Length: 241
Ligand code: NAD
Image (cartoon, rainbow, N blue to C red):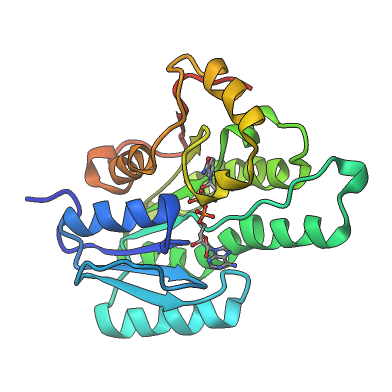
């Protein structure tokens, strides 16, 4: 039996990068359907992966989507809150727009998605929520006040939901992954002069690959992690910023 056999899975930001690797891994592990909730379609090809064109900041779009999934499948088993953006700047140069956009997508988006899906999981008595945080949310990073605030916020949500969604005996687990620096499009904006010291600072002496985060997400999403709840899993090659 595959690790996500017949599960209904929702991954935000599934069109590229970490989210795409997760959609592919989850689809290969027997999921009945994996919804990539994303602004763009990307080039996901597996038959059991579907694109849902939704902005995670729009709660009305999310509610309609969840309603449709509930009508068709009756339940949602896994939610990965992965969609995220950066707008980096030193704090004195960070304008309101940069602050608001990152908070809106990376933090409010996680709230919006979870608010719509967690009640369904609780009704069903089980489910797994995986929030994608960051090494930056644990240790901070120069030029990323907005991003660090959201990624630390996501950890607070994880600890809270690990308690909140398990009330009344529901086995709805909430965990987070704090990736280190992973080679995706998000990292293309980071100059090589910043990347090279990060490689050197990482005990494993390299950046991570999207598949390495997808495998960790698969573990937390699956029943293999049935007693893991309220945990923040660092997948960062040993990096401490
Ligand atoms: P990415 O930029 O490659 O992909 C992000 C995806 O999110 C894109 O497909 C994009 O269209 C989608 N998206 C953006 N805004 C959206 C919105 N409002 N609604 C729906 N979808 C939206 O990024 P990535 O590197 O794959 O990062 C994925 C997650 O992992 C992010 O939360 C990021 O903060 C986190 N993370 C990444 C790294 C890294 O080094 N790449 C490290 C730590 C954490």
